[in-house]
Length: 267
Image 1 (cartoon, rainbow, N blue to C red):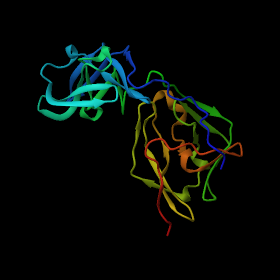
Image 2 (cartoon, helix red, strand yellow):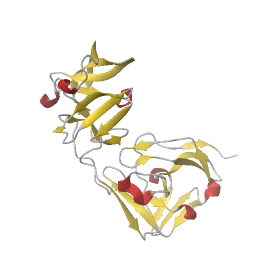
Image 3 (cartoon, helix red, strand yellow):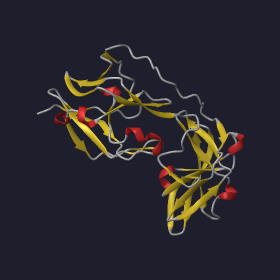
C-alpha cells in the first residue's frame, strides 16, 4: 500500500476564530422561531466548521434559563442554559458566552444543534451544522477510471466517475450503479446527513471471502442542487477499500470521525 500523504486542501481556521454571519439565521422549535437574526457571528469550536452565536436581542423573550453551570468550551467559558419555549423544555440546550471568550460573542448564545427542530439560513433549511464559509464543494464529471477492491474482490470497476472535491476531506469518487458488483453488497439501515450534499438514501455493507465490513458504500439519490451530478451514484470509503484510479493504487486516507470497519468474519 502506498504511503498516505494528504493531497487535498486542509482546514485553515483556528479554534476561537470569529466572523460575522452575512445572512439571516433562524432556529425553530414546535413550529415557531426561537431566534431570528441578521446579526449572528460564526465562532469556531473546532477547525472543521463553526457554530452560530446569536445576540440576546434576537432571541424570544424568556426562552433561556441559566442553569448555574460554567462550561469550559474550546473557544472560552460559557454558562449553560435551559431552553423553555411554549410547552417545550430542553435542558442543556444552549450556552451564553462569558468574558474570556472572543470579545465579539460575549453575551451571545450558542444552541446545541439537536435542541431545535429546524434551522434556516435565509429561506433554505440547513442540516447537521452551519456551512463553513471557508469550505468549497465541487462535483466534476471525469473520464478517470476507478476500480474498487477489498480482500482481492472487485467491488466496482467503472470507466468514468464524478469526483467530489470538498475542503478538508479526501476526494470522493461516485460511480455509476451498473459498474458495481451488487452480489457483494447488502443494504443497511444507516442514514447520514451532510450540510453540503443532503441526506443519504442508501448505505451498504460489503462481504468478501474473508469478512463482512459495515457501511462501506453510500448513495445520495436526491442530493442538494449544487451536488446534482452525484445523484444515484455510489461512493465507497477510500479509507477502507483498495482504490485504483487509472489503474494506480491510491494510499488509504487516515479515517475521519468514526471509521467503518470489520463487523464479523463471513460465514
